[in-house]
Amino acid sequence: MAVSRLITEVITKLKQGRMVVLYDGDEREGEADLVFHASFATPENIRRLRKDAGGLICLSLDSGFAKRLELPFYADILAQSKYSVKKMECKKAAYGDKPAFAIPVNHKKVYTGITDIDRSLTIKKMAELAQMKADGEGEAKSVHNKFVKDFYSPGHVFLLIGRGIENRHGHTELTLELARLAGMSGMMVLCEMLGEGNALSKEDARGYAKKNGFAFIEGKELF
Amino acid sequence: MAVSRLITEVITKLKQGRMVVLYDGDEREGEADLVFHASFATPENIRRLRKDAGGLICLSLDSGFAKRLELPFYADILAQSKYSVKKMECKKAAYGDKPAFAIPVNHKKVYTGITDIDRSLTIKKMAELAQMKADGEGEAKSVHNKFVKDFYSPGHVFLLIGRGIENRHGHTELTLELARLAGMSGMMVLCEMLGEGNALSKEDARGYAKKNGFAFIEGKELF
Image 1 (spheres, each protein chain N blue to C red):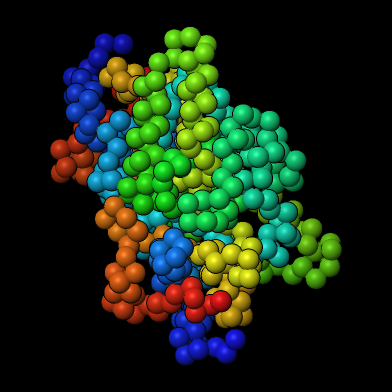
Image 2 (image 1 turned 135 degrees about the horizontal axis):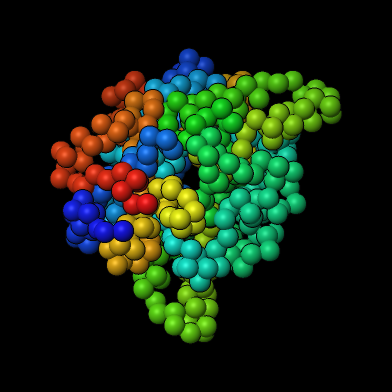
């Protein structure tokens, strides 16, 4: 795929630590997420997500990194449990896909885990983990060990696992495709943009992006 | 415990469907939550929680109702799983308690699950479930059956299970104690109030309550 001018703009902004408004598609959730690369997490931009977007603050991880962490999908943990609520496992949401949720985590240095400072810390520490070398088997194991030693669950940052843009066109995969195109590690922060009652409309999301100098991109540009 | 004038005011407001600002205590999380009874959930007050409070929108359930639902704690599901991340189970958060999280759910009639309309629907349907009679064993079973049939997980409303005010003084137990004193079903909506970077201070939470005509109460009034 030739990289369009729009994608070049998005990549440039992501590398500068700027936010991007990412709309999945009219035929899917019909939802815009406010997204940025995990390495740029600060209390200020976490605050902006909760103030301006309003959804859940999540962290998408590419499947390679999730594998190094030995991170399963939440739905699998639930479905394989001994509890009768395992029957509640979501196999397919109303918009047509399996959910991307893994487990929610906090870094052990947080206090409650929910404040801007705490969520930002958890995300920054996850981004640092992604920077650890994993050339050999021993190093992959040490990334896993650091993950289970330094973080706990349940926490307040919702980890998502990408299934690859060729398999699923959710915000999880779209954000990771942006990271890949930008040559950055596969870990992005995302939060659903909500309007009054419903998801923020595509036009309002575009208007928000324009007003704030953020790039606006639709999923279809990426697959 | 004699019911104070403050508690009488709080009970009256909760019965009217009003919100209450509930501060746990300086020695615990040092955090105020914006709370109301689940039966009064609307898209408008869910919107207020995300705009004015900013934390996770959760639903506390008393242990009796959780038992009828056969609802386990998330930490137990994780700890008993076959995955290596089970070592991440949070046994005690920095503020001293085990977490109250059960599983996150959506009602099956939602679309994405995260919008004000969707979260309000999920909560209203949970509140209806709590109204179902459960005098006999068969009826308790039918509440469970309706729960696993009509809701799925992972979703966007975070269920919490109370351990009883005599055992734990978290927002979960404090909200449920308020519901009990008000003679209402044991199911309350709660969301952490966040300030810039940190939790909203006690004084700012009190100011917010005053400005909006909400009652303000501290945990120590309840145990």
